[in-house]
Image 1 (tube, rainbow, N blue to C red):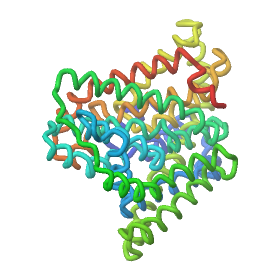
Image 2: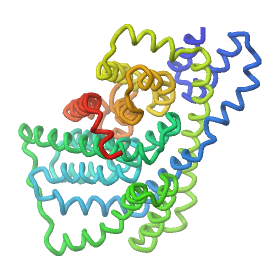
Image 3: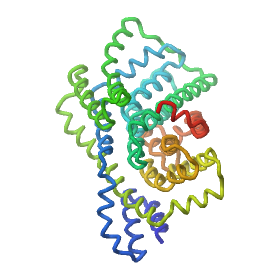
Image 4: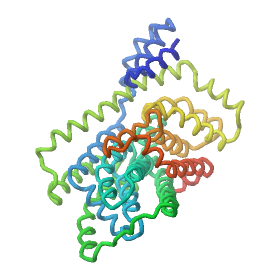
Length: 419
């Protein structure tokens, strides 16, 4: 009955944190081993008693401060210097700006909301089809959980007990690979659709964009540079990035006022609280999964299906694409890692870093696939374009994402080369 209770609660639109907590409680009661209830609070608290999880609210705060402080707009202007003059310049600007934002925000949903407000009106004004503009902006959000920093990587690092800094490093080449494949998709679509001619900024404009954009670019340098140089942990880098975003937005760009800080902090605390509550509830659920020996049963079944690491990863991708369509990425990550990671490492000798990158990218695709597709609804609410019209315009980028998954599963060095 535990599986039935889980399915009923999930399909009944009960918040996923309550689904996990109530299902675990039902299992304990149904098994008759009520002594396990004594460990329930300990497991609930133990799941969130980890220093690395502090990075999640801090990266959220950095993203909020960047958006309020005008740093996002300066990054877009900086991208104009690099790609603005090509035919379809705004499309390339959108993608380059998304890559810059991905190195700061760490959350696909937040990035889609921020960039949709900034880029879609500008693209529509320049003559681009509005659903396509919304689609390329939503596709750019897929880069956020792969290009470091990434909240999914933070959570995965905690669960897999691997250094979060190393997970960030493992995501650098896959993130650049995804960006490159998206550039190819844009070029291919441009052969069918005649993009409007772009316009290079004048020398005076380029100088101004560069001077104004450099302070904003210091944020990803602080985050990634501090981690790569060993000067700061991911959590410390997130704190430094939040401080830098506050000072730049207030004293350099002067777009941020201290009167906005209470609302920014309230919004960050609310969103972070939802994530932390989910992690705590999932800790209890994962404890039940391990107690019931589900990983061992799954391993026995998979051993009968394949003995190839590549085939195993492709099987995982197929399963997680279905899971990601109906379950939030963070919740799905918490559900599947305790089951599948021991199999990947013990039975197929797959690196925890390669497995983590493949799993996180697969799950984030669920943001942009029906029936749930939270990213589609976020993009729709920001732009007014129906979610299905965004999805129909997304297919070139989803195909490129699947190609990236195949390459990452096939070639382990793409994730391990920099470690």
